Length: 170
Image 1 (tube, one colour):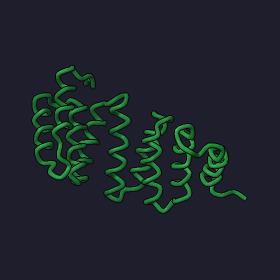
Image 2 (tube, one colour):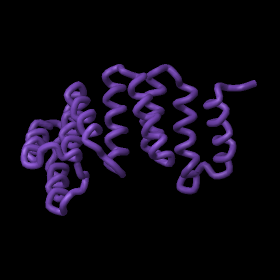
Image 3 (cartoon, one colour):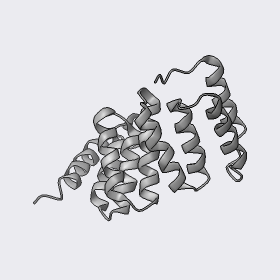
Image 4 (tube, one colour):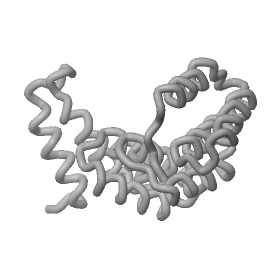
């Protein structure tokens, strides 16, 4: 199955986002379901339907769509986004081990991704692994010290991130 989008399909997906009302996701869900009916088993559209359910707070339904989209085969940026959203959904559903496993896959495939690190930090925090969560967030922030006012503290904060990630060694 291809994950390629025609310009028309990409525009249709964008239209769904442009018209989305997060306070009332039912029309967006219906819109993406209709697109999926026109392009059955297109992994990107399966993912988009999952995302619409996820935004509606229907994580259990979203989970099935994310799993199906992954099984159909995603790649590139849409794979990264799906893995992050799927892991977040698993976190909301309380399946922290599965969430971390998905994020480990995401980290292996997208080692430079800040979004993967942030979602991993959220799951680590939920799992009561706050030192690791803070280490992840410090890694993201110090990786962009040039656009913050961290300046000379960035190096020290990177060291602190590593110390926390290593379990506070003596």
